[in-house]
Length: 371
Image (cartoon, rainbow, N blue to C red; front, side, top):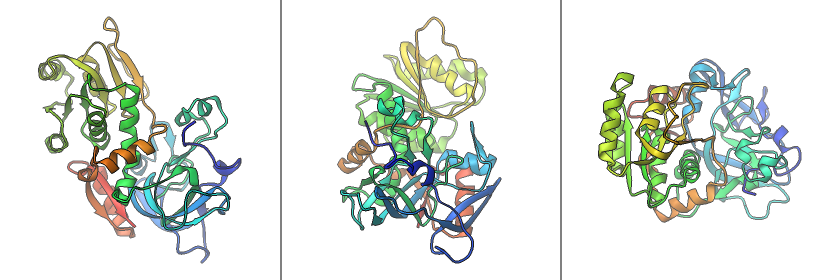
């Protein structure tokens, strides 16, 4: 079974810390989401260090699209923020303290943190599909506190040492990159797979990078934003296609995509989650092909599936991906550095500015905090 479980029986119930008053642990501060577009840096009390835990001083924390949804709407699909919550789940840092039973990590180690703590006991966990565990405790996913903080306590088996040539920022990028890697694994992308990626946001771009690393010979990426298409081209997309949000343009756009990929689209990844983008992915894919729904969109939608035997594959987070992420980064097979377009410190003003920057989108791909 892959890395994904609790280090002891009650860890999932105590891992997330709590807000504190007074001067206890005042040195540990976190970004608390208190309401719509209301983030405040306030003290954050850490849980006691368990025997299998480590205490990590965080150095790099990225903003994800789901963080932006929580910031703007206090919800992301079915995950609803009902009480103050520390935001964030993409992170890397330096170990400061280890529990008595931790053997493979020491203070000073630079690590990337996998953010989800599963139960390790249910059938899905035992199958290695711990991302689907019903008892999952995931950083910054309500009601669990996240990692935009000076320090966190986390299970040691979910902290992965960074190779010497991989930076802490790149370590934090393992989380979004894991989504792309998991999607490519689920779709069995290989050297014979022509790929379409719909959506050139952060997840679409890491899916592009992952598909190339898995050997896809031809990759086309479609988006409404010229700046993001330019970035996709610079990252190795063979062709980019400008699309619109208008369903009436669908037939022409699909024809353009199919003309670019003369042998047909074997696998399409929808990385946006809208009716139009999913319909584009389905319509462009060859009969017998696959469509992976990577973007978290609406709960229900009407999709054209009949007559063409297209396999539709759902994607939720990831499983057993961190070692491969780090190997791709170490070897240079994947370079995530160009995705980091904006950097901020960890002050009240900068936290607010960073989230507003990420929420605006545009040329902001990955917004990163340096703590």
